[in-house]
Image 1 (cartoon, rainbow, N blue to C red):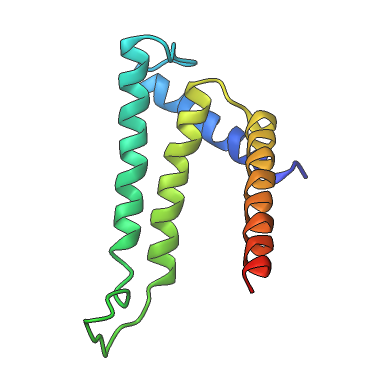
Image 2 (image 1 turned 90 degrees about the horizontal axis):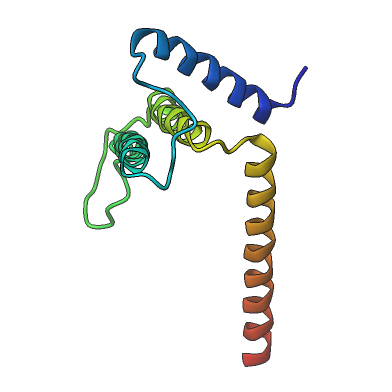
Length: 129
């Protein structure tokens, strides 16, 4: 079986290829330096953000001043909105010609930076004690 990240990219590409048949004006990769390309990327990013906002609507107990008694977290609905957001994120990556390997490498690099930040913070805390 293919690795899951590459498979996600492949599935999203397949969906986008089908969408092109419906709307032939949709094409990729887009020129991210052009006004039209940036408008497309902005629209896709906003769609992803909207889906994250829909996911947030399923979180009812985050307000410390508001008591919620009869609240059942809808895991499936929350996950569906997160997945909807990810669809748009992967669409955006494909539109700007970023693939699984480049995404993984960038994620890995940023992960290392974040680990170093945590390590530095722990060291500072130890020095303050």
